[in-house]
Structure formats: C-alpha cells, structure tokens
Length: 298
Image: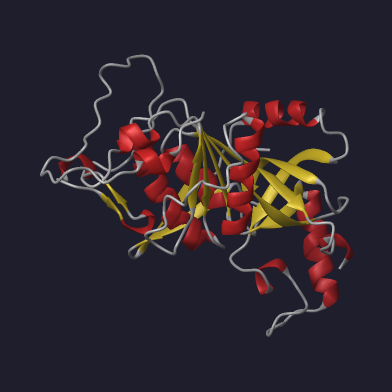
C-alpha cells in the first residue's frame, strides 16, 4: 500500500568530530513544500538529538542520509515494517535481495527504521503515546534533512465494523471514541483540541489504485481511535469488563451509523500531528485481519 540502490548504512556514518550542527538551509529550493515544525526553540538549539532514533544533528549528516525521502510508511510491528522495506526493495528494482539492509535505529530498541531509495519504513509500537513519540522525532528528522513534498502513510491491522474480514479501509476521517474528528492533547494541565482532517484527494487516489488489486476488498470510511485494545473497543475478553454484550453491540451500531468502518489506536494523533506540520498524510492501510473477528459480529 502506502510508500535506488542507495543503502543508508553506507551513508549513516557518524560525522567527524565537530561543534557544528547540520542546520537546514531551504533557501536554495524555493517553491518546494518543505517539512516544517511548529517549535520556535528548535532553531535555537546547538544540537537536536533524536533520542529514540539514536540519531542527531551533530553526529549524523541527516540531509545526506535522508534528503531524498518522499514517502514514509509507518506501522506498529518492527517485523512488519522490515518486511515492508524488503517488499519496497523488490518493487523498486534495487540491487541484491535486500537482506543486507540494516536497521538505522539499531542503537536503540524503541523503534526500527529502514530506507529503500526514497521510501522510509518505520515502526511505531502500539497506541497514541508510542506513535506520538515516533512522529515528533520523524518530523524533526525530515525537517533537519531538508525533505520536501513528503507523504506519510500508516498501515496496520484493525477491527472492522460491519465489513468483510480482510478488507482494506482507506481512512477519510479519523475520529475519537465519541465519533468526533478531533484529537485532545493534554499539554501540562491543559487540554488542547486539534483537528484530525486528512487529505481527501490522497484517499481517493489510493482508492483508485486499489482497483488494480481486486482480490483485496477496499473501501473508504472513518477510522476510530481508542485509548486501549480491550475496554476502549468494547471487547468482552479483557481482565476487566463493566458492560454487557448488548451495550457493546449498541455502541458498535452507533459507530457504524456515524460512518466508522474500523477501529485502531493511532489514527487521531497521526492526523493531528501531520496536519499541524503541513505533511500530506493518510492512515489508509488499516486492514481487518482475516483471522480476527469482525467487531460487528462479536
């Protein structure tokens, strides 16, 4: 879904000792849509350490390593994102079998990252807190690398509502547990509400592309983000359950009526952060696993 022969490990060399940070200079590429950040303090810092990626502006030449990135695909599982990177290696016709690809984030055990030509593949763990950490550092990475015209995708399994198991849901709107298109970020002792608007043209473009793969049932719909896997999604098999099966089914029916077609745990913060930083993004590849239950039938 989402989205050459240059291997990052060859470029991911640590810079010679220097007190100079690799600052961005965007003045030479007027007219391109560069990744931007919403933090006035970043450019005042002598060095920006991307702690959970084991990268930094003084220790790594980020523009050389990542400046050609055009597509970023993120997903929860490290193994899945490595498999995606290997698939991209094959699809792009790169040399070798791809098995020599190294994890760029090998210096940390939080996330994994692989680069195949202009495609970056990164894991983000499970849930809003984990993907939020990854997105902050990813966007700073793209900013420092002077990347432009970047599109970010999120792929992953999800629970379907009233659709065939194994379907691919392309998200047109990310909603919270109240079916509202918003993300509520707690910042110190305040709650800040941010829009979760996604790129509708991108969703339509992906849906058009899906027609080349008729063996995958594909649809466009709302994706709901919950705070956890069990109670937040109305499951009946967690350690805690304070509601009835009837209440659960009523909730899922109301979600379906509101346009929700699948449930996961990352889409609202994904949409909010990408939107704030002016990045075209869509969490389209949320598919309902054939070996998992369809939520509406539980």
